[in-house]
Image (tube, rainbow, N blue to C red; front, side, top):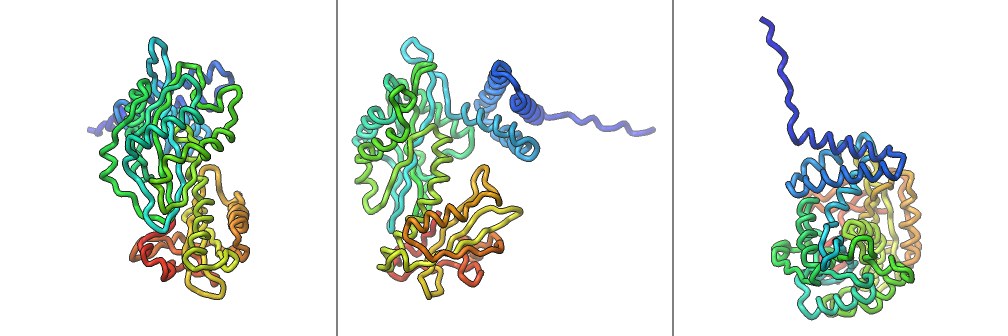
Length: 392
């Protein structure tokens, strides 16, 4: 007797992954606005159910598959996952409204520790006043989390982020404050430069403006300018001993991407300032060495900082490639422009590629020297208090 073939039963998870892929692919080739909305609504309903079920694996599996087979569908799926994660329906009085989780990225560097943790009632109220006056549209209400988050204190994954955004959305209709005691358990890693985040959720009736620049007389650059001039005053005492600047307050995922991009140049400028301070030299006395580092493909550039005519690598910055960047993107020109603007004119870019080598003992990345070797950094002697830090 011939043994019959075994029937393969598809799991519920696999079926959901396939359905997400099908809808996202259909959306990516849609040719009318009406069809766009049909697929967007269908995809939104399914993703909202998955987030409620906290099925992170299904979302990641669909994204992983599409990243290899259909980049356009991947973009469509990623956009709607992010929208469902950070956006919630709320009731404002008797009106239907929407609440969007926002983030305010703060770039900072310091010879000492960069702060994180609870903000306190007085700072929260000052921040609330300036956000209302300078950032958000009229007739909005918003919540704030009473915590200054480091990157490793942010919620991990879409489902955890959705839970936090839901709590903030619930509080937004009453201009509430979210206590975040649990975030205290995660100590931020020590870096010379790092990012901090203010989080909250802003709500408005459906179809109305959320941010100041959405209003007729609003200009995004002017919003940032006014926020930087006035809104950050309440944080200066918290950032004592730090250099700090704010990026534009945006919806959560947009702010996260913007901070990733902006932090690269900020790290270069901060390192120049740090070495000038520690060595009591001019920026023109530094040499920077740039190396392209590959895994299976180009992953990042590493920039080593040395003092002219001296061998030790004093510090290093990793410049990761971000979405849409590859070997054809002229990142080297951008890096050189930032360094020259900071006063560094002696710049060497190696033409050959390097491996993604790290120190066997501490796990930190190695940086290029003039001869083409990847070496460990040697912090200047005057900065003994920073012996355990490196650039992020």
